[in-house]
Length: 415
Image (cartoon, rainbow, N blue to C red; front, side, top):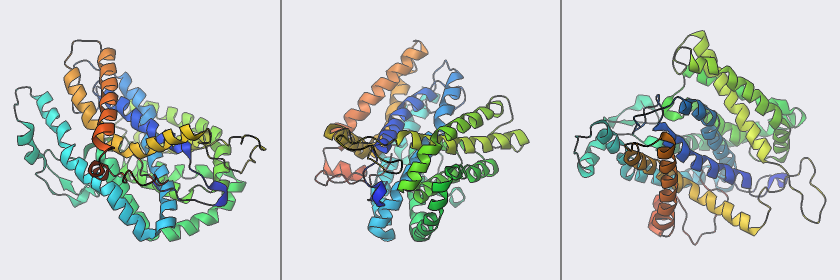
């Protein structure tokens, strides 16, 4: 994500967005570990005993978590393009996202697929070395753009986020100037009427309703994520927009709760809400899209609260004080979390699947197995990052990190 200095009222690193990145990455460990116990999702490894509670609880996360990352990525892209220019922005994204995408697809993504085969047929003794060429046996599939390669075992897995973010970034670069100019004309209206911030809920509802939901992309249609990124780009860090977002946060959150509650009948008892064309299924998808925007807007506003500066007057309702102003220690922690977010994301799913493969065969209560998978995965992921990624120039490059000698800039790619 980019985060070059914006308008005077909006300068300063937004620490609450670093917290959100870390929250989503850590939350994905909990989320993917839970899928091993879900009766619905086609996860790589399944426990013999499952519970429908996983599906219900997961819904509260998928409605906002990945959309939030795309919106924050759009916010950062605005500042990065302003500083680097469209060409520099495209080159930076190819380097910081393209390299870990290729590395992760070749080295990490085969492991979950191999474990899927072994979990489905314990008698299958295919070695990982023998499976790897089968994983890489691919054919072109342009109809599934931007996932243009397909194969019997090949997949980008959890790196679908990186595929979409890189694609959307490259699509955005050539038209960024015109989008920024158009967004500037909207700011005065948002300052007068914060309720206008709810309008993106309408196209998001339409995209999900008309194009369908996609389980492989955390329950959203892939093109809805492009709208989130464009909204982040359009609303990027203008002080007046941030003040309007804070004023709209509580009403948006309440509206989001009502809309999300309205999806319950369709997801629980109706026709397939992902693809069916019955009126109830289409309405469910539309409500889901609108609820997602409301929750993302509410979270941005609730977390972006001005703080009083010690020894000075409180900020005005339009002044923005960096959310990470609690001291050098907190600043350092947030910067480290922001820099680590992409490597942690790339690492997390193979680790979770490997732990689940070893644990789900236990004859233990589901809660115990789940706790072991989560705690073990978090420990392994952080150890791999600290000793296998962060300390080497080569591995830093492969995971999209800048050299350790470089001061961490504000435009760190999101997880």
